[in-house]
Image 1 (cartoon, rainbow, N blue to C red):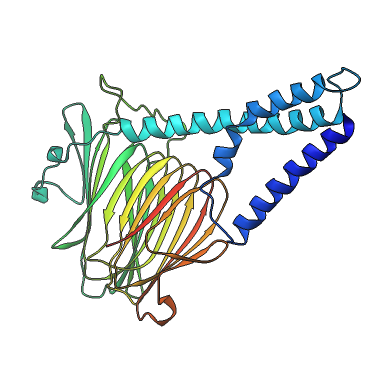
Image 2: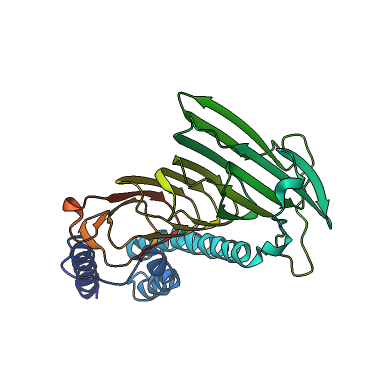
Length: 335
């Protein structure tokens, strides 16, 4: 009995080792992930029971059962946590509600920093004027618990309209140095202050942030978004550098071809990130992190953690995506 058991488990280890090795060396491609494998943790408990049943000493205390249980426990914990995280992310994504019609396009009624009330929500308007000396601009955006949208501003460098259910709101700071304008637009510090998010009857977020940027300067965008939804179309903007740091958020970004080189850094926790890149621009994806879902349209896998579009090395315009994430979903499409 012991010899047959050794042969069986030896065969199992050889098959599993061959499958993992073949996947890592790209001999073949299997549609699996650690998340999917972890779902089979109860099977290890069943096998541990079988091993105990056939143990000559008729005891659960044997090496095979102990090893299977040792693997089953962390995989079971991971599966429970993963299910909870996905449920939270789905609630956040489904729970965000926005009505763009609530925004008043007639911004001439506001100063560069004004507060009003629309229904039961606080409305703020911010603006930074465009000056001829500004050739490059940096936007540092920080916030969460809202939906963020982007439009073009015909006259000003920066505009923002917020409709929020909490009182703290946002702050705006600006600095100009050597023709580079830096704009800090961030949620107010909540330390020691009341921070309430109101829900409607369907338990949906009702916080909206509408940004308007000038297409004239070269932009460096730095976004720190917690829970929320971002839908930014940068196709008409000269974006040189884009930094995205997010937690449980849904990020939808469309990039353009106005710059020869664009660098995008993404640091995501539990997020859904969708990036659209132009068909005529070479694109490279460098991804570090486990337990991620990947969907790269028309990309070739060069090696582990590296994907490129065909002819990337010879492309005159290039976009580089550097991704460091945990339990996230990343989709990159060509348009």
